[in-house]
Amino acid sequence: MATIELINISKTFGTGLGQVTALKDVNFQADKGQLILILGPSGSGKSTFLTILGNLQTPSSGQVKLNGLDLAQLSSRQKEKIRLEKIGFVLQAYNLVPYLKVKDQFNFVSRIKKSNNLSSTKLNALLAKLEIADLVDKYPANLSGGQNQRVAIARALYTNPEIILADEPTAALDSHRVEEVGLMLHDLAQKENKAVIVVTHDLRLRKHADSIYQITDGILTKEA
Image 1 (cartoon, rainbow, N blue to C red):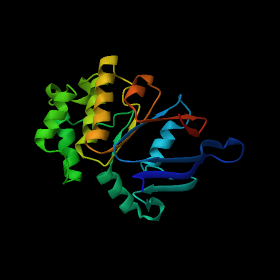
Image 2 (image 1 turned 180 degrees about the horizontal axis):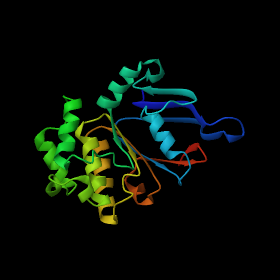
Image 3 (image 1 turned 30 degrees about the horizontal axis):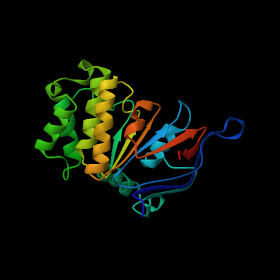
Image 4 (image 1 turned 45 degrees about the vertical axis):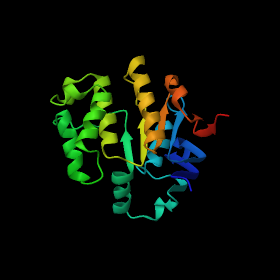
């Protein structure tokens, strides 16, 4: 049984002559222990793919399954619980709380999700690995784009999720940082037994992936 699965997923926006098809009959599955890249240019459907995979929006047709459970059968509250407990998101906009210092970003999360988060020791080790341990008393506005990106990655990993979904996680990073993040994501999949799915156009991450897919005009294909 796949950890997460898309079955014949299509997504359209608008109606009539203004209708746009973002995804076309997409089939996909990911298991724990895998780092999967979804490569494609801007406007190819990558972000729509990721938000449907993460249960942030519903498809026009098809099924999304998590550990065999059809998410369409769940209530809004049950879906929210799954997002909180099972899925870690790294989004392009970072989504950090602007009036909270870096250390308080994690305290805020722990008030919402009270159990199974990283211990203080593991969180400190993660911050050190991402080279942001010295930034904990700063606000997002005082950080560079790359630093905010790494804080967002740390916050997503803090909840100890089963599935990690990342949207262009290396967009604001230089080559050195890309290598570090690529290795870390691969280790999370392999050593921590998590399903890690990254949508990106950053080809520097290819060497770290276990599987690579291409998405073009809403059509997903797996590389041989």
